[in-house]
Image 1 (cartoon, rainbow, N blue to C red):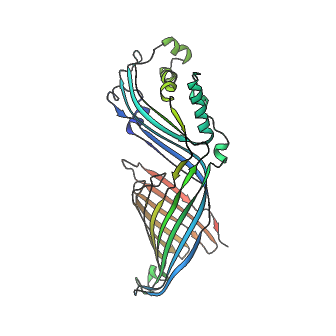
Image 2 (spheres, one colour; image 1 turned 90 degrees about the horizontal axis):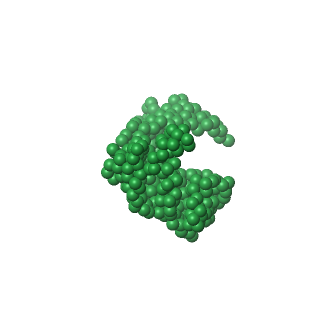
Image 3 (cartoon, rainbow, N blue to C red; image 1 turned 30 degrees about the horizontal axis):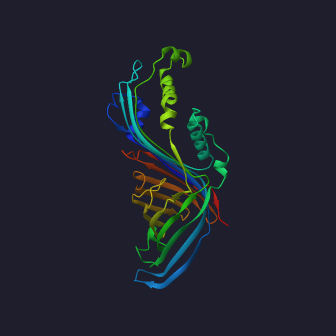
Length: 369
């Protein structure tokens, strides 16, 4: 089972949320934009790998070169999908309790969804066109089918190739942490090739308008009697009732054969150098699409490991680029022949674009038979 999503807001959208209808700040047009996407699916995958090439000696660096190739075709069962792209410019003049001032909003949005959610929006639209003055929130209600019913099927594939070389025992010396088996592994993978198909009642909803609204009807008696004197609640109610449904809910709807959504395809090259008790890892990759934590920005990851008594690993690493700022990792655990338990932690320093983060993970108890 997999699910991914992406949400982004413009600076103007955040200012509207935290500042409210601040005419001092919105005295000129500012972009109030948001894009959101969410989708979920299930994979049934079968993998196959084989050795495609062997060579006893390789350029004097080592022996027993093996090249393995693998393929994992998978059946994709689509569950749920929704996306919204909202683009707008907003300007506000003189909004006060005594005077509603003027609000100018030029906007356009496109919403795509499926299943019962699409049917509910279509029913709302039909009732609105019939002159029933419906409220959108009265129509949106989660259905059990939203989480259990398959919405389409498609195919995908993962591809990979790996080269392994046993290095000479005297490589990097044969003392201390370098004493023991020495192996170099390099791999190339192209994962999540394919696309999801959401074909159950796939619909698109679109709206665009340039409107000017000349303020609230300030009614102190209504504020006191119906909203306990809360002006903010009154203003919100007026906005929703007066213009919310009539302007923003005035959309066109179109039936689609299906929504086709590309998987978060990733190209990655990774390497692992094992020198006795010491290991060094390097990984570089980039997404072919920007979806979820997949990013077209190239990422580079470096890591090292040292095993005390060949049982207790000490790990440290750094990851740069991709969807976040530079992240530092550390971990340890216990690894026996038939038992494994590992823990790790990560911290991301604050940056202007990507913020800061802390994370932790553990493998749980793994028993090998």
